[in-house]
Length: 379
Image (cartoon, rainbow, N blue to C red):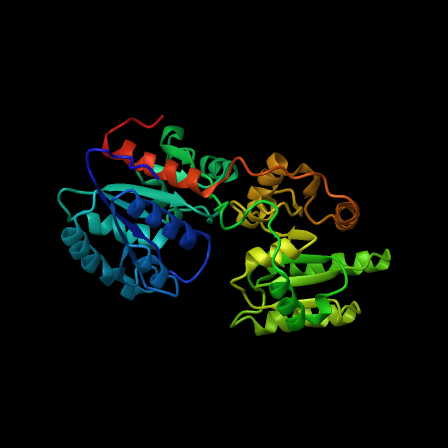
């Protein structure tokens, strides 16, 4: 990636609660990687997590501070963060979550020269004063048009449209190459681990162990396909996670009630998502609450795999633009099974990705940093 500032380098501090997993965390690492590649100094402040090792291996610095823990004790991190900012001397502080944004905002009050403040709204946060801190950035990044509309609808008096920049998340087309298929060794190992998924088209619903992700709808879809004599299998990828045992037990009971024990797997999160997607006949995105973006939609389409999802929020926005054949009205069970059956018979061609690429997101974010530093007025 070309350096955005040919005559100077800068230091950017990103603030985020933890670095375990999630879209905001991945975006943090992706921008950190871009900063380092462009010759800048990248620092992330968080409570830590499994992604710290990758962050540091890619050339960024990590400072452990629990700025996202929702307790009164977190207020005491303001002074500690202020000392960090005075030592690091960043030109830009980029907050990616509400509580870290509040801590950063208060900490910067005692720092001279005061860093520029940039924020990203990653999700459809509940409206109110607590969430409004993310609108105080000199520039406010939102990850979809859906999220831009949401912000303007709920905060018409708190932000002018010129300060909002729509920078969608992007996927690495090298990590998700068009038309990729996993090798025979991987396939053999996968079906040895999950033998019940072999022998029929695989439907995969990726998502955490929460009912908001629509796991029950996916199970009912499989039952409806079976009723139509359409044989298929279902993988609920990532739903089996610590602390969600009661919810997983509820899903298993539904699976048993529908007579699908030999056709469904509920798995933990896996590192080989690309291979799983590439082996799937259909990727499901059935979140019952609107998503702000829907990265898995883009990942699947980048691999040339069809996607079916509810037509609302960021997922509906992406499908309308990239794969209209996969859109289904929210909660419409009959339309869902009809569309799934159609796509299993014949899926419309999927062209190689020309948008929502990781490099586009990285370049747009670094260009926004450059505008802030150079005092370029918001467009």
